[in-house]
Structures are given as structure tokens and as C-alpha cells.
Length: 466
Image (tube, rainbow, N blue to C red; front, side, top):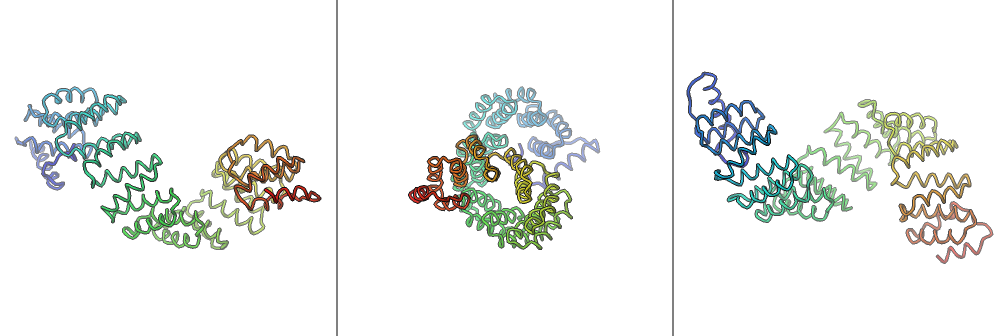
């Protein structure tokens, strides 16, 4: 493979050699090229996926150099590219006995067996390829790791990457793939370590700063993540993804004013991206700058009339402005465009509840729990409605079905305690409140905002002792 062997030709020289070769063929003149020149020509065709030309060049090369194992290896590579694995293996089995660069033969055999799904033979050949590699063993380990990496066999990829790193501590691609692979297997601390090690060697690589920002976000180090995105942007002011991630990180930690500034910068870079305008609208909405939010949502729709989140955003603002019927229209439009968005159904339930259309609110909240059973808000809303309807047993049944899923949620405990107390099961209510207080000391106040405890001094005293 061309990237693995240095023929002493740069791209321009290789192109000129191919042009000379093609001119001889067109003019039907006799010519001679040595083995190295043919290797350059054939690799040029392989790299450009001109397989017919590569095949013709291989046949001409074999006719001129019938005993060249280098040309035979290129023929095997062509068969490999064309997925003619059995034909390739016949050549490689022969070359394994005669070719001086045995590691290249074994590497290609390993790749073929990997593609055929025979991982045992693939591993065996890769191992032998590394053992017989006389030069640049680090690069060979890296190339093998890339095969596993592409197919997301990440643990095996990491093993080969570590061997490559052991041999060459400064190899950029090895360090980068170690950082990325560990991020993919969710070993965030190791990912952080290798990205930082890479930046110590190559501090002006924007994509590494960008990936480090993602890792820092996963670690909950939001300020450092924003700083990493800033470094990325400083190196490459048009690295759009860094602006997106910086803005979204700021919004996620409720620094909406700063997020709006970043989204405004993004609008200059991506003036036709509806997502940017919609995200900016959401930030304005959170800042209660509703006119500006509406302007951004309408701009979003003008770019993409099917952008559901913009309709939803308008619906939320209409509800804030005490126009619930208009809010319903826009939220229903959003749901018609994207019917499986949890937030849309949650918002729909809230508007129905405020309109006192209780059964429709219940339907919306139940749909939300179906779409995302791991989010608590829809369950909390259902529990509040059941309490309002004095369906205390329904609250209990729902929490029983949820089991331990939301054990760390104080609001769930408070609502369950309210249902239990109102069902005259004070001891069980106290047990729930005790757990809720341990999670959040202010949760007792939440309980008394829901339940009016009248003429029950004993219960009041017991809650003070929790």
C-alpha cells in the first residue's frame, strides 16, 4: 500500500510518471519502467480507485518483471480492494514463502481474514506481521489498530494502539486515537490523559482542543470545556463545531446571555442554519426576551418550514403570554412534524392542564412517559394531577411500578408522601419524607406547599424531628 512504502516520489512526480506511462500506451510505443516505477503507477491508480487501469498496469508490469514479488503483492492488494479475497489469499500464501517484506504480506492476510469474519486467523496474522516487522513497527501496530477501530472493535484497537505508543511516544495519530477510543468506551479519565499528552506535544491542533472540550464536558468541568473550545476557535476561527459546542455548553449551565453571543457569532458563519437561529431563540426565551425569541423562531421557520422545535418554542411563549389556545395550535403543529419528542408532549400536557382539560393533559403526560420512561418530569406531572383528583391510590400504584428508578428524586418522594398522608397512612408518609429530606433538606417545605395539615400537631412535630 502506497502510504506504507516510500518510493521517493512526491505527488507531482507520481502524477507526471503516470502521464508519461499513459502517453506511451496511447501512442502504442514500446517502453520500459522498472519495478519501483510500476509500483508508483499502480499505487496511483489504486489510491484513485481506478481499478481497471491498476489491473492493466499490473498485467503489463508482470509481463515485464515476471519474478517481482512486489508487483504480485500489488495484485493481491487489488484483489483485496475488489473483495476477491480467495484470489488474493492464493497470491499471499505464495508470497509468504518468498517475499522479503513478510510483514506486509501477513498484514494484508490479516486484513482479509478480518473482513471475512475470521477474527482468530486475522489476529494470528496480525501478530505474526508485527513479529516479523523489521522497520517502523509502531506504524504497523497503528495500521492494525485502525482496522479494528473502523469496525468499533475498540478494546482490540486500544491494545494495538498501546503497543504503537510504547514504541513511539510522539506519534500524533496514535495518541489521538487513544484519546478518542477511550472516550468511545466511556473511560473519560484516560481519554483526558491522552488528549492532554497530545497537546503537550502539539499544542496548536484545533481538533484535539475540540475533542478535549467534549471530554471535559462529560467530566462536568464546564468552565474548562468552554476554555478548550476557545483555544480551538483561536487556532481556527472558522471551526464551526467548536462554536456550537461552546454555545450549547453555556446554555446547559444556564449562562444564556453568554450563549446568545456565541450563537450570534455562529449566525455569521452559518447564516442559513435553522438550528442556530432556533437555539438562539431558546436562549432569548430563557432570558424572557420573548420578542427576540419570537423573531429567531420565525427566522428558523422561514429557513425551514418543517423545523418542529421552532413551532414548539412559539407555543411556549404564547403560553407564557397567557394565550393558551394559540399555544396549543403551535405545540400541536410541532408534534405533527415530530411526534416522538418527549418535550413536546410534556409541554402539551402542561397547556391542557392550565386549560383544565385534565383528561387530555393525562393523555399527553402518559405519552411522554412512553417516549422517555427515564425522565421524571412527566411522572411528576401525572402524580400532581392524581393528587388534584384525589386518586391517591393511583399515585401509589404508579410509584410502585417505577420501583427504584427514581429513588434519588426528592420530588417523587414528596408526592408519594402527600398521597400516603392524604390516605391516612401517616407513618409511611413520614418514612418517605425522611428519605426526601436526606436527598434535599428543603423538600419538607415542598410537602407543606402541597398538603394542608390542619389540626394535626403530632404530625407537624414528627416532621420537625426528621
